[in-house]
Image 1 (cartoon, protein in one colour):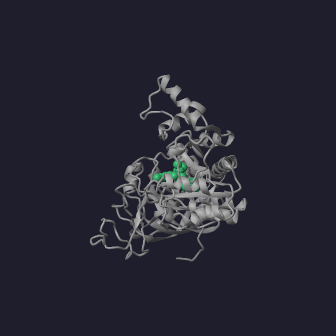
Image 2 (spheres, protein in one colour; image 1 turned 90 degrees about the vertical axis):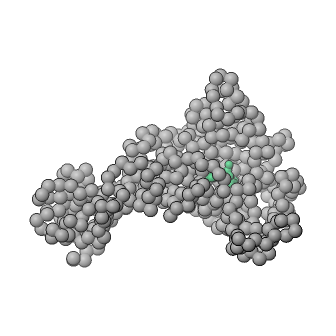
Image 3 (tube, protein in one colour; image 1 turned 135 degrees about the vertical axis):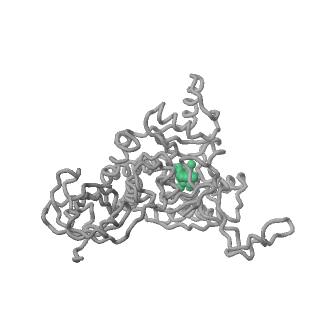
Length: 467
Ligand code: 4AD
Ligand code: MG
């Protein structure tokens, strides 16, 4: 076959130099036609759109033609011509075809319309579908948006460890990391495991958050963000929880909670605008296939100022809803850790726009949050979104050494693990604030997908770590 340099389909479909010789490579989505002429829809992943390859059967070897089946990988040389019937402006009149990889009829993606549940079982092949091609291209663009947003504002991308000895959120949802022989664990006289012979000579885990190390960096570099995988061994089998997910955590010296809310709102709006600017073909597809209000919802979030409301006022609204006959599965009272149904009531029914809830009871929030003067609440902020519930969790941090140390003791967090964190409050402490955005929760919002398992390539959930 003549060597012609490859044109990606995304670029080919924009060209207008009809008559040019081109090479395209990709996988067969469909093949149809008559005894004389066949039409092959070829996709190479560079765009949701296929290019139509027109094949005059008489010009090609019969044995080779038999190998052109759904899923087969082809290299095609041909003339780029203006198309009338393919839905695209451009098609390729094939002159030479090489089958790079044949694909037999056990290929599970023969026909369209597989359920998302079935596609999860073949997560190794699902990127070849229109839906997951779209989702994973959007995932890429959102990662770029995030780096751009912070880079433009002078934040330093700071890498926090994945293996750690501390439980940032204090929720005891850590996966342990060990090289010890689980069949032969050494224990002391109290029955506790002796970690002396373990790889790190101490109990170590996968991180639930990079925040604590992020704070060390912010109190030196000024403004930083992390963007990495985080792990939670929480046994929640919901459409919004993963055991392994990606989190973005900005942390900024001298910011208070209002600055923190402004940053969070600007950040999400920037990401949504970026998606509309860079991913419209894919978003249109998802809008048509899964969620007819997706584009409208994305555009409306950009226009609105997020409502900012203390937790206590949020509870009052929910209590009134109960009095008015609204049924929640879980009870509402001051002090409760809001369930997703409560968050969504505030966002979708009451305010009909994103809500930032602040000043939560200290009992339901982590030790590091700045304590309010009332002695009951902390300067926390959760950003609540339509369809999602909590998309961001953050706070102004407790900058006062004594208050922080007291809280650590009250919550029975081992002080000896925290000496390095407390040092920031001993040596030139400063007000600072930050938050964590769940990357997959953002993707749920931007793609309109309903299940978090469908916005990460290989989801890790309870009893599931295939692929
Ligand atoms: O609210 P979280 O637990 O806050 C923190 O981890 C803080 N250290 C963040 C900070 O202040 N730097 O988690 C932050 C966000 C949540 O709002 C949610 O979007 C996401 O992380 N998240 C999850 N996403 C998917 N699966 C899970 N199991 C998640 N747990 C939290
Ligand atoms: Mg939270």
